[in-house]
Image: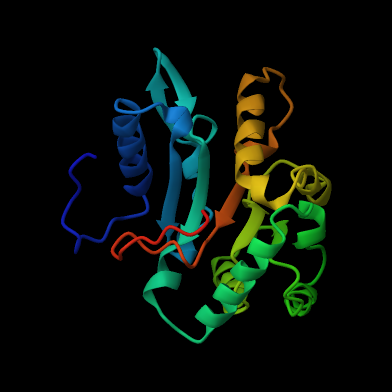
Length: 230
């Protein structure tokens, strides 16, 4: 792994993509990149960062890292560091995931449309382990929304990043909810690879979507890692 700055250094938003691509490129020199699972820990304010769209050079071609790795997911850096009562909700909802891995995504995730209050009410049902929605442009609203989602213990979320080109966001998001819950990260990677090969001018959903996959038993890198399910 490339040498990074001291652990007390506060990285800027502009530095993060180059740091991630440097690490991925270094790993790709040592192992097959198709076997590499990447988890990026970001603060709430930077969850919209399109790191999966950053590129590295592979066989003399620039390739998006989100479609090269086995899986590429986002996690919350603040959630692990700021221990609170909401950690119980987080562990409880992830434990629910483990009992329904083979259930269809459409049955286990909330496809949110309408008012945010409706989403928060729907999350009172712990049989629903995550949500799918359109991201918010306003930074304050974005911050407030994810604070609520994390308070509810949501470990899995898919959202369209602000600025996407789709006039029917609910329809394109629903198109990602195929297969069972356990396969979601892998299926999203396959879709990214398919979109990479598609030369048509149609906008590609995977160029505008982020996956949060946040296992509370898979600890922050500063801690000792525990091997439960990824």
